[in-house]
Image 1 (cartoon, rainbow, N blue to C red):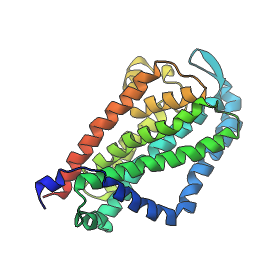
Image 2: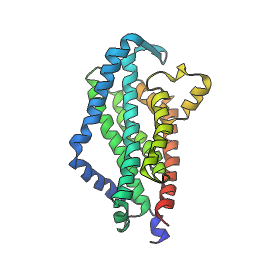
Image 3: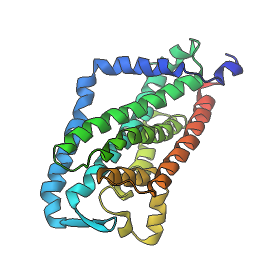
Length: 263
């Protein structure tokens, strides 16, 4: 396999995306359930249970109910989970156990196109999940339209970011069990300390700085601000961070997967 071919990238990556879509359509009813029920469970638990204890939360210079605070955070978490786990466990199964990558590399597709298609599909899964969650959360009257609709393109951008970092880990782990390390050391801390369940401002200064380096912090800020119907210029910083993060880790994902699969 020539180095020139492996270094090429074109719109043919869409073929990989289409292949994954066909597989998804066979089990979409099962995949549809988690983003449908997850916000219901969280909102019932936090909105009915914990919200009565917490009351309101001061965020962005105003007081909002706790359930209104966490609802956009749940969308951000879903964006992260759907993209990250798609390009870690699911992509690893396609690559190592099903040998799907080997089959695709026997076609005119380059490795870069395969990886790009996988990342684009992970971002699409995030977009689908965010769309479903927007519909569910809207029934509780917790979102402001039309500004909150901007969460949808944001979901794709966030999906690219987390799908790219997931693919980096896929290019590094020796076996599927080792995904427990990035989940425990990377995903879980973001789940807890990225402003999803409480304002980052409540953390000590050093912890706020570390949180500002996490992509989920910026995604949570964006989803929450858009859900409240606000469009301040400060959001450009958060969008820029996600764009830069996506660009860096997308490039790194290509490098890591190339080293793993091209001997």
